[in-house]
Length: 338
Image (cartoon, rainbow, N blue to C red; front, side, top):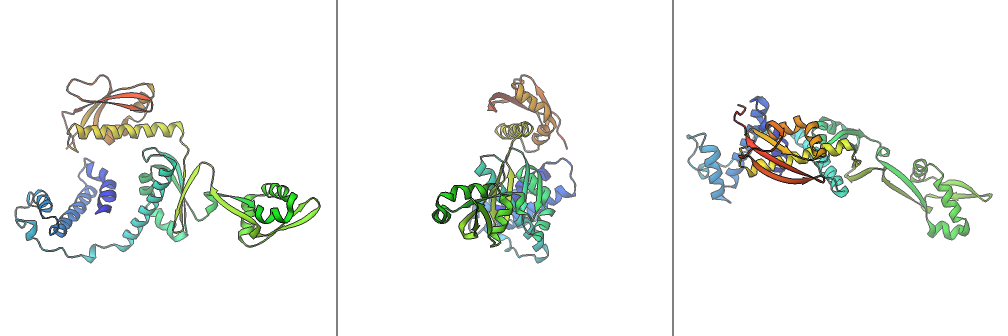
């Protein structure tokens, strides 16, 4: 139920909303209908009244020949022919990647509405091949422009090697700061690889040759500059957290879309109703409307977007976005798409 509501329905919204009645739209509705009718039959013994109400609304209303009540239906039987184990495994993997990505965003304080430029996924080749099949879905879900798939952790991580004062400090006393400085001057990646492989290095400190062993240093890994990471079960996800002006404006456009969509609900518009959108805004938000006009129109089913005082019959709301005041008025369009 959770995957149906938080993943399938949300991921299929555009398939439900699009005006053309093609095979993809029919498949989306058929899948959802099958899931709902199966669920209410299974849940009927536990929540009899709610399932009966749903049954009458989505089954009996369109099929008068169906059993009179959900409680007259037979218990659903699984259809093994509909089970695609490979697809299910791949989708579970995509959900895991998206969960790691959302974790990165959450810890970085960056909302999912804010577009970002790049993410990196580090895993083994077989896993990457599976991820690649769903690359478009993942970048859209995590709202990033590009995704790099690699087996090389160095794409996302950098290294630091720190001498251990509890060992080398006691061992070499006043020479410890010079050992520390000498290690800092070496390539951290090569040094880390050397120590991780169990090998030692030799340093020349004040005309003395000093051997540094792996157990005498601490090898640290950290995200590369401007990246934040999350890792689980040998899958590492790194996201570039830099927000350029272009990305920031696109984020504002998505925020505007969210406000208009919520305003549509408050105005009791139907999900398929086309509207006219009127707005008054400061210079920055006006630029956002102009730059992302088509995107805002498509996402909110706006036949018209005008910068002007809303008409009297409009449903009006005022918001504070990006430091500017935005006034939006919505009117149901006279003609609607079939």
